Length: 305
Image (cartoon, rainbow, N blue to C red; front, side):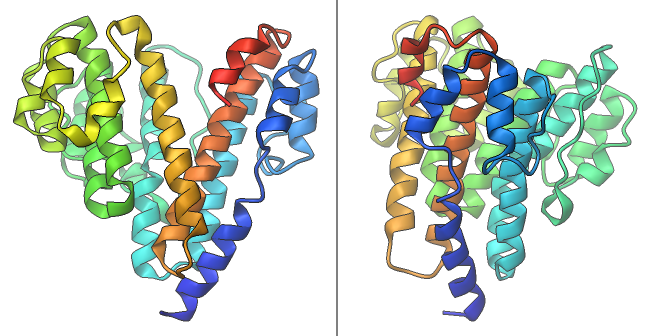
């Protein structure tokens, strides 16, 4: 046990206290307007990047940016192996940055890239790409690998599946979450149509060839190993996939709580703390969405909390 593992474990457990929490979440969601909710958040644990006067998109970005900032802080306290673990977990921000780049090319409003610092995988290389073909070429040269497509949806889906595979390999404690996330991604695809060949290849890497062959939700549910059966247990139609996503977040919360409560000074409380902080950020972003609509209907928010 190194001194740095002890330090980052202690700091990770302390970071968990910097959450909004269920009771405050309901109060935040029921705010009369977005400005009131943003004002409250700016004075709390998300004040690092949530500021007065932000609109919904800016405030939600600020919530995620604060979560990333917390990840970077923990990475700074971690030994090299711990920093590598956090780099894999923080790759969501690099995916978001690439999606922002794609939106800009489609004529959308440019968004502020997330600041990854030393947790970047390939963003310094990707950010200067000027076309889909160039982006695909640079991705192929990086740890992300060739997405097998050069359209927006193909690139976004490939990055997410690649992330699931990377987390499974680099963060064994989070492997079950990553594989379950890959199942939900695939479920959305088969609910629309049979995945294209490049996607099937990526799915096979993440979940195995039997799962990759599934063309319907029923086939996918049947092909899943027992350890992943819970993901689609209550899902029979595409309209119910949101329930699988909520169940996924609940599983992350449950597992993360157990990791933080463990007695060791190792990677477990670090991964667990980031899981709990990530769940809180997801809930806060949902609360902001509801606040922007006048705080109604609040009963639907109970599924999130």
